[in-house]
Length: 358
Image (cartoon, one colour):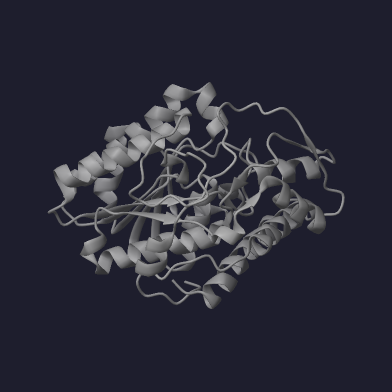
């Protein structure tokens, strides 16, 4: 254990989607907190992957199981008996959801229902944090941020599947969990950035790949504004939420938005300019928009998380991007040195944790 936090120390924690970008960061964060972590996920979908760089297979109990394989999920979870579950397993790319809509709906909706069904069978009580998305709202591109009780929607398959997941969660909570020993909430986060993401059709990974290959990154919609925030800040929010849920049954069944201050919601072009200022030789070019129904503005109201969890973003968007770019610069300039990248990732978490405890 590298960080002093007795709540998570020795807790048995399941992370679904542990091979993904956020899942790998969270699994490593929990490892540093002294938790006993088990992961359930598909094999890493990118190469390189943060899961492999951090050598998580040597740090946690990693299991490559599709969230749709309900019998195997039941078996693993029943044997592990987790104290806390963070459910991040998802098909999370909007563009891919148009190419593979059925896969997206199955993974995001049925995968979550499979997990909820498994929790129903557990005799041991557990806390469950289900991660959905800021895209779950019916986005009318309002300047006023969406609150947790605003209308759910979503035109593209990804966004709609996340809205449906929220509806399924509410149904299961009120039908099966409200008066039981299990406690659960959902978390809706904005555009998360940080080192170690190599997903296709995401702005920061696309920029890092293009720069590494000495090419201009192709940008679909430079004027689009999003609630950018560093992955460590979001994970800090998820951990605060788990802690609060264990102590306060009044938030059981609730949903929470996690996003930056409105002043930190900036355009893609702003992000590109920050990268350009901090990575010599980086450049970009605009192309036609290849994604249907892509919106220009998305804003979240995070007053609930601010008030109930005492959570807010601490890093400016400029600092969040600089921290992210530093990670990629180190990765590409040191020929993918795993030991160096593990140490850098650890230090980014430790530095943040020392300043802003859970």
